[in-house]
Image: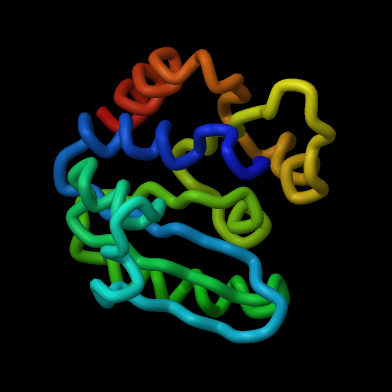
Amino acid sequence: AHKGVGKTALACQILKRLKGFGAIKTTVSKENISVTSKNEATGVPGKDTALLKGAGAEKVVLVSSPRKDLDWALKVALGMVSECKGVIIEGTSVLDYIKPDVAILIKAKGKRMKESAKRALKKVDLVISSDEFDEAVRFVKEKMK
């Protein structure tokens, strides 16, 4: 989904209600692979990872990887949060590599859908707009029972 559509805001709302969950923030980069939970990367005030931590994530992992290496980087990140009760992953590209218990796509009003989001449409459980967060939170809580 597009930048600014509310992915982190929704993840934070869910994390506030699901105790013991970790979070993985993914970004597709051009070159370097980075998978880290170090505070200098995940604790920068105002950044998505710090917001996820502030919402109650047990552990936050930041993944930055070219698309071709995302499968490997995601496996490393999942290993880093394996002690958590569950994990919230922010990023639609990961749906090319994993089948989560619940997948939600937030559609941006008035914007063309990214290719990764188009591919994800067949794999998601719920498609919402940014004003439907309460419905999404209820949906996730029900699925995680």
